[in-house]
Amino acid sequence: MNIPLIAPSRRLRRTPFSPGVEAAGVRAFTVYNHMLLPAAFRSLQEDYHHLKSAVQLWDVACERQVEVRGPDAGRLMQMLTPRDLRAMTPGQCYYVPMVDETGGMLNDPVAVKLADDRYWISIADSDLLYWVKGIVWGLRLDVLVDEPDVHPLAVQGPRADDVMAAVFGDGVRDIRFFRFGWFAFQGRWLVVARSGYSRQGGFEIYVDGADIGMDLWRALMEAGAPHDIRAGCPNLIERIEGGLLSYGNDMTRENTPHECGLGKFCNTMTAIGCVGRDALLRVAREGPTRQIRALAIDGAPVPPCHEPWALSDAKGQRVGQVTSATWSPDFATNVAIGMVRMTHWEPGTELMLHTPEGPRAAQVQAGFFHEQAA
Ligand code: THG
Image 1 (cartoon, rainbow, N blue to C red):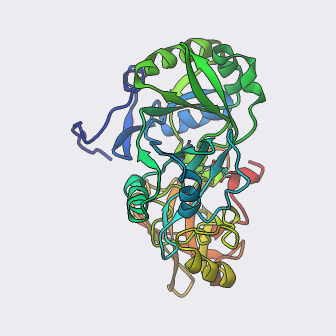
Image 2 (cartoon, rainbow, N blue to C red; image 1 turned 45 degrees about the vertical axis):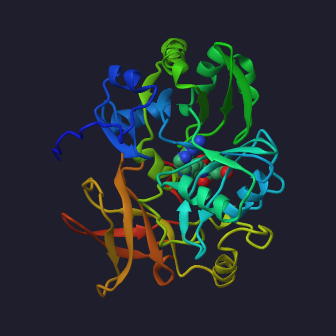
């Protein structure tokens, strides 16, 4: 496919790391939270093999932060999500579905608890800031809500620990999954968390201050040279294998967390005060009638999936849709994420997938591919 260049403007924001990304030879960008997000460097498949075997530096500044600060911060956070936050302590990160009053997904961010009265909400691609500000204004809550000068930079891959230890010290090795510590760089204290949008392990550095962005980029590139570090980005193949969902692609406001398979991150009974609680209590009790599933698609590599592809049964009745699909070199099949009606979601169910290049046989999987042996 050959698409024209996208014209940059003030509305399409660059990041503090953009000069590094461009020097590394980025081949494609997407737009996420009105910001540039690299989508490929050498090729999707080369990037994939390298991510799984070495280590990559990712400009994920587009994971914008919504900062919530003040005496009502904790109460506000619990209003925003059906996940019970009572046990969350400073130093923890939680993956939290956020829903509207109907239980429809608004975002699936990572919440970062900095202090009892201060959080960052590390958002997926929707303008959550306005929803949060509206709630705060409507209820006259005592909290400040804004977007700080904070820009996540991820180090992902099996050799991430060695690279990070070279820059921040051996202390980073002790950070547990979805926890963070404070580490100094050029005299500034930065949040360093063990998290990231891959299944290969690694860290996310919340770079506080755009001015030190390129210095940190260069320091990590230098420290990573012996480990074959390269600029990289969230990889479509790896994230489909890993079952990492993409808000706006695999799920929208049309879906409840339970339909998205995010029921395990909801404690609707005890999430007192959460917006959409009544709606979610109902769907949690009855269970969803459609749900996210991993699928395998027969045949040659599928074309890029830019809009939902219909799934039908043998009689041609629509039973769902696929929203992410690509060829997986390691599993030697096309891997996909879709939403499937409960009548057809049993593992092994044979479905017909309607791609722009014609119909293909597809099979519902028991779990995501990364849990299976390649
Ligand atoms: N890191 C940070 N911010 C983000 C993302 C991130 N904002 C945008 C986007 N990614 C939000 N979406 C996700 C989706 C999945 C996960 C994190 C953010 C994730 N999920 C694991 C899972 O589902 O198994 C772990 C969840 C858990 O066990 O708590 O990691 O990547 N900062």
